[in-house]
Image 1 (cartoon, rainbow, N blue to C red):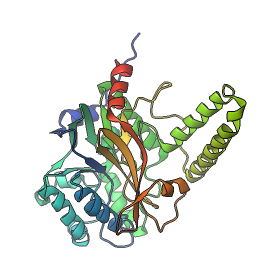
Image 2: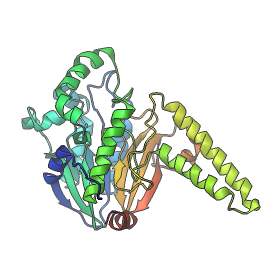
Image 3: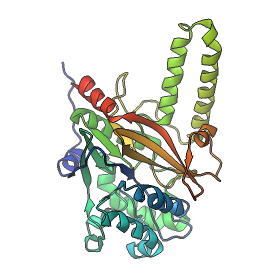
Image 4: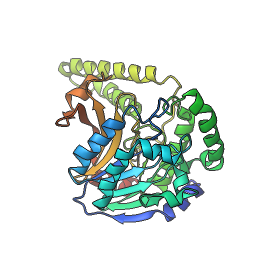
Length: 354
């Protein structure tokens, strides 16, 4: 008997009303989300990485003629006024305009900047969309912020806004402290994954501030690699055992570090069901990380999760620094954490979901 699939009505509505965009296969696209730009004072989450974000946007993506997709929560309108935000981050808006003037900017709203589509609609500088339906390299990408997956956010966003403005802001509570909680993130991501799986599309989201690549977090990837090495250990010849042991120890140490950092606890289940993770859900992470920022890139027929960081700030994993490339004339480095061919993603959707 075929399992009944419950479709998220909010996602269905968002998908049906997504703005269509077709780009040539040779176009390059960068997807960023969750800047949470504020008034430039101590409780402005964007303050720490603002200079780095503007620098890499101008000197890397704009200079190389990339398309820029801003996938929600760019302004923190649940804490600050639009006037104060634009006053403090004028140069950032000038940067956005430079992309826009080259017809290379798409701006999508999230739950923290949704006012721009409602009571502040007359103050929009750039066209603003709920979601984007992108066709690129013969693949459909459903790009939306992510809060649409959660009935909680859709129903209680005003209450959340009240708490952020009148409680979190005065107390100086920052957005990255315990963004919602791990269980809510997990539930939201699972809803997004199931919708993508049902529609046989690739979804690119933000909102949770947790990077996902091919429907998996870094922690899940490490666990999978450890399990794979354990299963192949006995089958391998004895001369290969030391090398496999070394890899397992290295991954075990990384898993310990990831678990140590996960002080709020992570659900034991993955966002996907069954034994195989269908690569249909990706998350760009955020631009307010403590050690750097992440984004998704579509380029040369591939999708990549990319990490930008200030090389003067110590990184937890030394290999990130080793495989990164400096941006000339700056203190910033770019590292591709993981990438895959779009053709592989498309084949997975066609062969596994049909």
